[in-house]
Length: 256
Length: 313
Image (cartoon, rainbow over all chains, first blue to last red; front, side, top):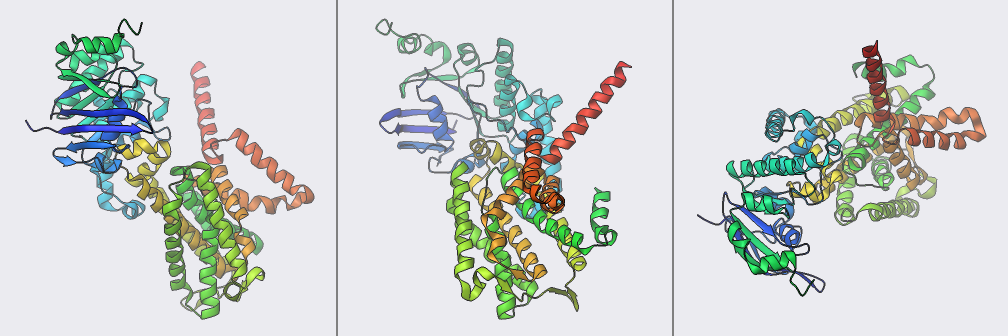
């Protein structure tokens, strides 16, 4: 199978600090890949580079063979790369439904003028947007809350709302930045189900997560970062046993 | 809404004193500016203290070209909107990269520059004493030279602007603008071209201010720099806040209240400034989200409470 997302010798420096150093990995279509590592390992930096928020110091990011590391975030989104945020970025000034409707921005056309004129084609598009957004809210179990302000939802549901908003457009790959952080075990299980459902619907997933049960339970492949370097890669049960991984997570005797 | 529209349309026939029509006309002109500014501030979250300059550019471009060079008023109005829009584009591209107070300071600086140009370019603008002899608008052979004739011109324009703005905010574009306000980084991650959207809405709001300015110039037939200093910019921003940020209907409320309040307060003479400040403070304390959304909320809660009590019976 052809690679969907390819990261090649990616390096990112902030001033004198190296957040990522010559990192390589790839994600295949329909694959769930987890990116794990201790805090400060460079996981979120990787996501921010893939989505165009940061420019890499060197190295390449390509999507289905096309280089994307010099594109602006909105262009990368239009190519089918969606994401959620570690620190929740739900639109506080919009309802739950409207939040998800923004997710269909790249799938719709209406511009400033046809918006002002409420043109006929635009009205049809609006109906379709609302139908699709409501459908996804149903799948995510948020339909009853659709008219509440986005930030009126409890924390766990806001995380789920972000996932719905990112997924609604049917992206090629979805980057999830700590989707289970702060969730209880039942919510975490539900999140795992959602992620599986998203993959089954044809979207690849790059998962940054600290919850090892979640990561080991649903990932096809796990990549381990530490201090900006890739220290291991493999199937979940393989990676779990690597001494470097255990050391990175639990610390060595020297650290203690 | 129909009742409100009818009331607005029939207003000049209901009042005898044409002074009240004049006040209503100024309200209408402000509604046009405030609606555009609300799209920029209330929806997109980008604050401008420079819209007095765009209002003034519309007024002066229309005024100078029609009074000094005999240009026909209506096409000149379109020209004024285009030229002002281009100015907004040129300053918007660098300025909208700024955020928060920096954006405020940059737009304020622009307003000051335009104000100084109005005073110093005396040859064209008439300097501090202003520019007179601006012709009235005409419709066919009818000169729109009375308060009442201008009332309908202004309010029909304001109404069209309101409808356009309402349509816009309920569209894909409106959601994109609100998303920029909510979280710029998330908006971009969902595919909203945040830079282009901010520039477009900045230009659109400047063009609306210019439209209002042109109408003002042909209505009053005289313009002077004082009208377009940055105090005007502050006033229209206050109208947006008092009416309700992100509430298009609130724009009418804000414009009506803040335009007519100083006139009404003439009754208390020397205390008028004090009363004005007091009213603004009270509104902001009790309705921080603005007058119209605040009142709507109050009504909703009352009704909810009434329902709860009815259940208990």
